[in-house]
Length: 133
Image 1 (cartoon, helix red, strand yellow):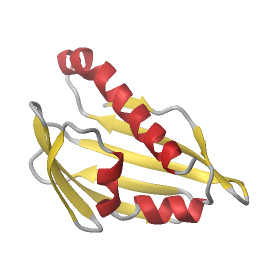
Image 2 (cartoon, one colour):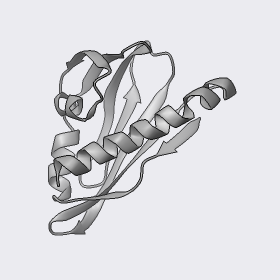
Image 3 (cartoon, one colour):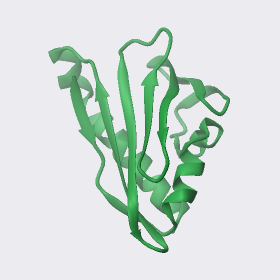
Image 4 (cartoon, one colour):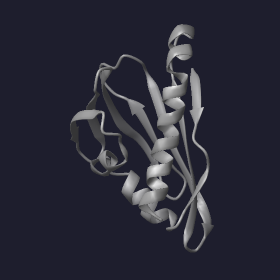
């Protein structure tokens, strides 16, 4: 598995708000780039197409209040992956946040996709920081 970790960031809200927002996939679209098409979601799962690349589906596999949301690939995906949101209380009005994305890639895929996947997790963290600025 290849591992991609976002920069840790401080969100200007409490962890409960972050947990509630990220724990519902209907909110996830707000964080995604414009290249995402054919979006559909319910609270626990989503499907979408990354324009010119692939169709992806994922589902929430575990919710741990004020600590972690664990997401896994679901159905037919070009690769298997796990996405984890980690957050912890910084103080009464802020939350420390990071993302870890583990994906099964062969060496060639890793070489080709590493920069894009690292940018993806950093972009998700940045968009969430902007949301709570």
